[in-house]
Structure formats: C-alpha cells, structure tokens
Amino acid sequence: MNVYLGIDVSKGYGDFSLLDQNKKELEKVFQLDDTRLGHDALEALLQKHIEDQHISMVYCAVESTGGFENNWYAALIRMSAAMPVKVARLNPSGVKHNVAAGLNRNVTDALSSRYIAEYLITHSEKVVYQEQSAYYASFRSLHKHIMRLKKQNTQLINGLKTELYSVFPEMTRYCKQGVPDWVLGVLRKYPSASALAKVKEKQLCRIAHVTQEKAQSLIDKAKTSVASRTLISNEFLIKNLAQEVLDKQQLIEKHKNYLVQHCKGEEVTLVDSVPGIAAYSAAAIMIEIEDVKRFVSPKMLACYFGLHPELKQSGDKLAFRMSKKGRSSMRATLYMCAQTAVLHDAHLKAIYHRHRSKGKNHKQANGVIMHKLLRIIWGVLTSKQPYKATVDQQNQNKKPVNSKTDGKNEEIDAKRRYQPLEMEAPISNKQSKKRKAHLESQVELVEQVRDHQYAPAVNI
Image (cartoon, rainbow, N blue to C red):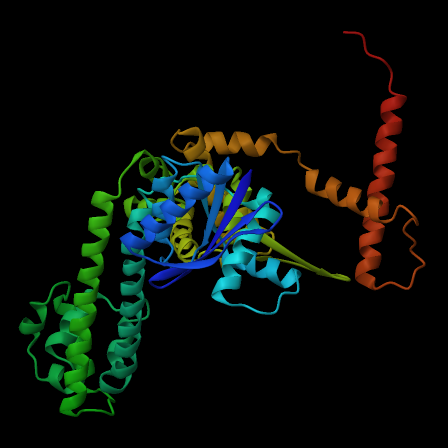
C-alpha cells in the first residue's frame, strides 16, 4: 500500500496530512515544530505506520515557500536512506489551481496540507520525485543577495542622478549609461559645480581617468553652470551618494568573485564555453538550473524559465510573446549574455540579423538569442561536450524548411473537415488573404504530386 504525506510549511512549524490512495485519512492532521524534536517525532510516526500497515512507499511533498521548506525537505531526504520515503517540491500555483478546480473555498493550514496530499494522488504523473544535487542550490542564497545588492546600487545611482541634475546638471551628460567611476571620484571630492569651479586643472587630473582636456572642460562647465541648488546640504548628499555607490560596487564585486571561486564544477565549465557567458554568468545559470536532468528536453527548460513563446489568438489577431512566467533572475542573466554573444559569435550574430530582417526590433531579436542560448546550454550539459557552432548549425540544417507551414496547413485542414474554406463567406480582408494563401498552397501540393506520378522512370 502507498500513502501520501502533504506538508503545509509555515515559519517554524508545519501541518501534516497522511492519506491513503483513496484519499482517506490515516492520521488526523497534526502539527510539528521545525526543531530536532519535531523531526524525530515525524520519523518515529512514519516508521510506526510503515511497520503497522505494511506500507510499501510514503510519497511526501512540500510546497516551495521561499526557503521555509528546506529543513523539512532535507530531513525527509535523510529518512529516505532508511525508510521507503520519496519527497518532492511542488509549485504552489499547481496546488492552488487544483483546489480551485475542486471548488474548495476554505483554506487553512490543516486543509492546505490535505490539498497537497490530494494533489500527489490526483496528479501523480506531474510530480517528480528526484533527489537533486544540492551543490549548486547551496549557492542560491548568495546569488540572491548579489541580485539584491545590484538592485540597491541601481536605486542609489538613480537617486544620485536626480540630485545631480539640480546641483551640477552639466555632469549628467557623462551619466547616460550608468555613472562612470571617474565621475564618482570627482563628485566624491567636488560634489557641486561651485566646488569644482574653484579647483585647479592639475588637482583634477590626479583623479583616475581624468585627462587634462577633460579636466579643463569640467572646470569651464562648472564656472558657467546653471545649477539651481548650491547649499551645503546638497553637496553633503551628493558626496555621500557617490561614496555609497562606490562602496556598493566594490561589495558586489567581492561577492561575485567569491561565487566564481567557490561555485565550480564540470557543468559550470561547460556552460562557460558558450559564447557570451563568462565565469560568473555560468555559475549563476547553474545555480538556477541546479540539475539539467530535471528537464527532459530543451523546450521544458525554456518553459521553466519563461523564455518560450506564448501564442494568443482571437479571430484574425495572432500574437507571439515571451511568456515571462519563470524566474526573472535567469532571464536577466541571459539577456546580458545574449547581447555579448551577438557581438562575438558569428553564428549567433547571423541568427540575430536574420530575425531583425524579418521585422523584429532589438529586444525581440535578443529574446530569440536568449532562447537559443538556453537550448545550447541544455545541449552542452546533456552531451557533456563544450559548445561548437558547427554542431548547432548541423542541427538547424536537419529541420525541414517548410515544417512550420505544413503544420499550419494540416491544422487548418483538420479544423475544416466538415466544411471546406469558402472565399464567399463574410470574412475580413485579413482572413481572406489567409484563405487565399492556403488554397494556393494546396493547389501547388496537388501539382507536385501529379508531376511526380507522371514523371518518366530513370534507370541508373
């Protein structure tokens, strides 16, 4: 007999429901603390049920709740070494939609644990019980912290630009793409136009990357500045914001270097071989993927991170958009990698320009490269071979040229099996063009078949 354990995790404790395969309660809902005593009590209870009822397997599941489930998940993994226990992490949205489909209106911690157990029974084919490698997952907290630091740094830079517009507006022309280090160095010492106007050229040239020509230009602009704020408080704020940005950037680099030095492995090396991906990006990507064995196909990997195209059709309107339903951190990493890859890899550059020639803008074409990079990453990880542009080109050549068109024609024929397409129907101009193109393609196909049937035999 198989049983199913649903765990609704809260901070510091969890609610547990134990059901049999007929969704009958084997144990009333109970609650345990996330402590050693609580974990030991769960192990003893499971062991008792296994022995008394001759249970062959206990299927357990926790929802992904931002890390609160990690201790319970790890404890069940340890128990699986001595007991017939399998554990899985569930996407909360899957359980939520299953509850909505069952028209269950009440939601409590006790009921939530039961809903999780019922999901295991009802949708067993969607649940993956796999003990994943925890190596790359162990760096997830560090990577999240780096992302938080980057976000904080962006907020500081935006604040600095806002204040700078009133205190020294002429300096903002150098800050269109972020704030260069030499600008931060200048503002840290001379935080206003009035302060910079009193400086000699030689003093300004002591700051790194400030040439004599640039120093003279800055001083001239400071003397004729149209700054509206010249108070000491404004200078104090600019000076400290510049220092905070510099400190934050150094802290980010320190964390990134630590991640690169310690998050290493065969998978990181393979991902690093892909164009546009450097050591830090490779580590960040593997932290998100964790184990490529979780994804049976590159399509599944793309869907997991929201890079797959999402089709929206209504009448004559047809639109494809990137779904963006997965983790945004992965897409942010791949976006920068795609920008670099287009510049340094001829194969990916050709793909980018091919899509630009079809009418896509830069971001849309870059999204195509992001999707391509993710498919390449899946390929190098599963084959355990570094990236080669020739391999990807060969794979592309294997695809039928008109497979997309043929598939669309087959779909139309399948839907119109009870009535052929009629041009006399009261349809829109757009639909009329589509029908005309489809009918012409059908005529061409018939002619090709006829020519092939009556072609003279050739003896070789």
